[in-house]
Length: 457
Ligand code: F0G
Image (tube, rainbow, N blue to C red; front, side, top):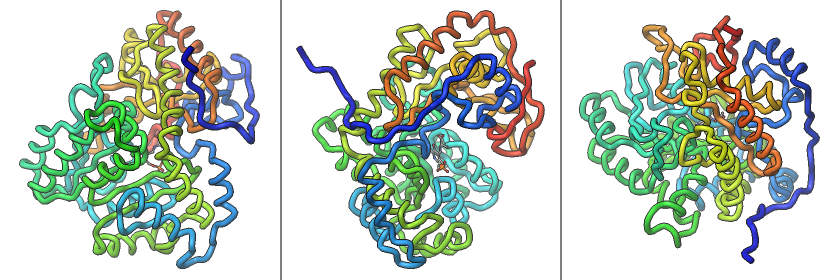
């Protein structure tokens, strides 16, 4: 008999989590304004809000914490990080930042000016936020297949090269760079193929543009390339990662994902000149260029995490757990983005609750239902997150209205995944009884989903 699959780690430290009653949860979610971000974590049983900064560090990462060098300038921890980035990702220069959006803030301060246009594949919300904050525009050039959750395509994160070239031709002088997010979070944790990355590089070269990778989940992207792209089965994740980054001039990194740390990020680049320019903003916003908002111990854990994050066995364990959850949901007939993403399962709320109007925020309604059902916290990736149009101030309704169940790295067991799956099945079975959604009471002018206050319609 073939041995079943099992995790590539064992557990040394545990953290209790608490169950609650439906009655308690009804009270708590109401006082949180039906916004899951407003709940304190002790009111959550299984927390799938995000896979960002929520992973469990390894014994080796914790050991590295003890070796952190907290010198203000020139700490050995900085050099550890520099070596890991150079060796694994191939970039000569880098700047540490406290997280991914800080890397965006610093880099975009150098590269983006008012009126610019930044094409890419479904920009992440902070990326878009930092673009729009500078009165520039993000143009989504993701392939159309990504927006049909019933279609199975191996690389739904791919850039549509025709759409990209059209923008390069029509807005050429306004484009400082192209940004490619690997994997593409907003389209469902979907990977970008090496072939596509190479074609983007070619187009960028043809029009003389920089290519920036938003690299939060670059290792998961490499794993999918190994599994799905012809000619890559026998290559190591490390080799694939190098080949991916060979197509980029610059990368921003939220290390809270694939470097498996609780806090940290960086910008890496080939150009010394860009490093020099970005250093000024790094010092202003983040800290001196050899720590950039991170403590020495965090830089050590990050460097170690980069090595662990690209180990095949680790990635297989991780992604198989996401598939495990997604597989159960599919068995129950629950509509999800297919194929299943790298870091999360994305439930298609439009197909789950088709009888609710889009103005009633279907994905948020579903996320609230899931919390009420079992104390599971997911997150809305839909109309609330899409915000209002900065010019017209009208609500934007994206083609995908999703509830994301993001799975923290090395944290939950498959028993937890079973609870999530059954909870959603219960809701799916009684979906017709959910007659009303939510309405906005108060909202912030930008990135409103974090703090929006809602009420039942
Ligand atoms: N880019 C991508 C693709 C992301 O998914 C995130 C964060 C960021 C940039 C920003 O990084 O949080 O370190 O400032 N995504 C988290 C999420 C928050 O839940 O998907 P950050």
